[in-house]
Length: 343
Image 1 (cartoon, one colour):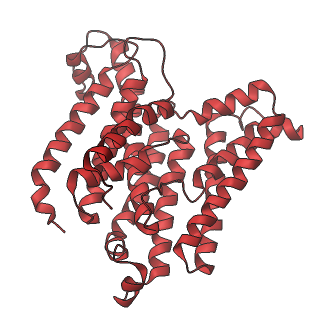
Image 2: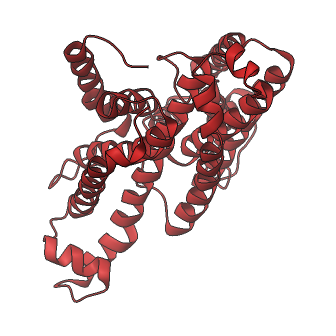
Image 3: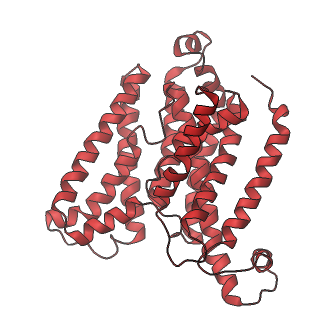
């Protein structure tokens, strides 16, 4: 493994690129605001129109921070899952966490029509959706954690997680089949994902949960590096496999579950960012990969969000579609160019 000090210039370049993308993301939108006024709004300076300050501070800045939290969290949780399962196709939602969140939201939006129970406007509000998605994710996460205690084989846990996802997807399909068109449309819009619906209070709670997941991920760096040698060899080195697996699953659950609850199910980032990072850094050391994934995930999410905004247009594209349309060809190009997948 290459020492982290040899990547100093690369890290500095990525940090500079992240700052540029952050400023560009805040500057772009349906309302044109000059760069100087954007910067003045951020530092509390004088701007030509006070409405511009409101747009920057109360809408675009929380959205850009949300993009950073989502991109970094999905990237790290994808890296954790790929290392834990030794599978390059594993992502943050492989344990069925996203499906659990979708089931929670589907029961709230679509289930009311199916059961005939009147649901108050509060339950259908933004916080109602967040709570429903969180409960769905937590229930599936606890089920997977119980399985991880009973089952010793890591690949069996992966398959069981996929089965949980299939079961919840089937229930959602039944609910969607019987749901009225307007409620089905509302559920579909939630599935598109969104970064722009959070207030500063929402961002504060969201960042707190994500920070806890990040701290647990950092604590898992040594077990992750040891797991790269294989479970049997890691066990012979004295690694407690069950405790390490539990720590990694909880960290992934906090990151992926909170992101799905606050921003909806967002595809591609968790799967692709770890691969892009390995191609760039040519290392499997998680001391290097985790900070690099945080930075690159943030940059890619900011770029995708900037494109989704369709600058100078009143329309906004679904962020879920943009992450796949922009990211998937990049990964294909990298794999064709390198002719193999680093892992």
